[in-house]
Length: 371
Ligand code: SF4
Image 1 (cartoon, protein in one colour):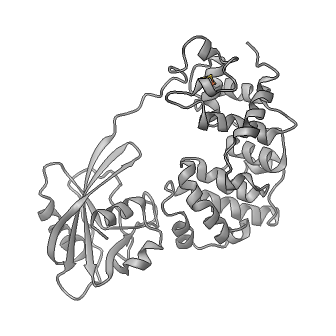
Image 2 (cartoon, protein in one colour; image 1 turned 90 degrees about the vertical axis):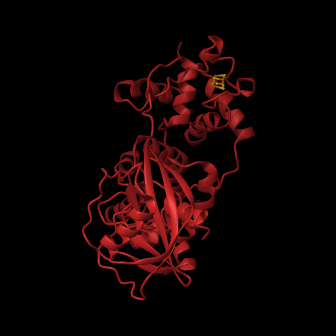
Image 3 (cartoon, protein in one colour; image 1 turned 30 degrees about the vertical axis):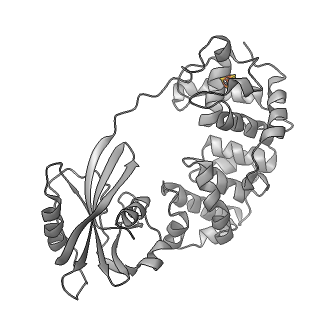
């Protein structure tokens, strides 16, 4: 069945009445809209709300972000996760400065060619900021379309994506493309939920094929997920006065540049205490005293379920300069435990550390250790 001509109008009417008042909906500034779209890619709205305005205050335009140092950028992004997005955003800012004279590009192709910007983000920025008639297909929109028109398959797969994009294009209201795209996204976020869609409240219930056929719960088809791999880490919170020892993750490794608590991946049957003491000695040349179990932190990251046993301790000697030594783990590393950069351990005042680019895992470890 082809899309109904008044379907989008119904939906935009619903959007006008029910849309959430979100800060990125109060602006037509393409830079602010790009920032919000990138932040929202893998992060919930409630979390983004905490960061968006602070980030824009620090980097109100492409020029400011283009000139930012890596540590500042990572600190501003710290807690949002998926740091590759921050690096891409900075690369996009530098392209805007270097190739567009600092002015945000106003045509779809130029927006799409910015680093880290795909068809969905480009469509959102082009339609919302410039009123250009380009559709958006993100997870929320794809779920709505799959149910409305009984579209099988995964919109992320190239072979199946075409059907979703064609439908989104057909349904787009070309007079209000920004609101039209946001209306589909909002319906997916508020009403056409992944689990238990609120069909009784849905403005499109009459047109919805999945509802007519009782298939709302099986569409879209669930992606087969690998069961998460358990990873066991030991982390040591080394305290010296008000400072705690942290390492900066080495360039080229997972979450490079972020500060982390020194941690080691171990096997299921390893003696955590003995391994921690030996590892600190071998790796950092550091003896410790007062090693005590402090708690457990849990973290999920890219198909891994990480359990961290957190210890607290003090350095045995006054000297804390630590020479990084090559140490080989006995277990195939999952890449979750930080690989320190060449400076090894450094003691940083706890209050100062909280304002720096700490990984989400480090924040959980500090909390589990009562800091
Ligand atoms: S009727 Fe239900 S399944 Fe269909 S679009 Fe609306 S909320 Fe989604």
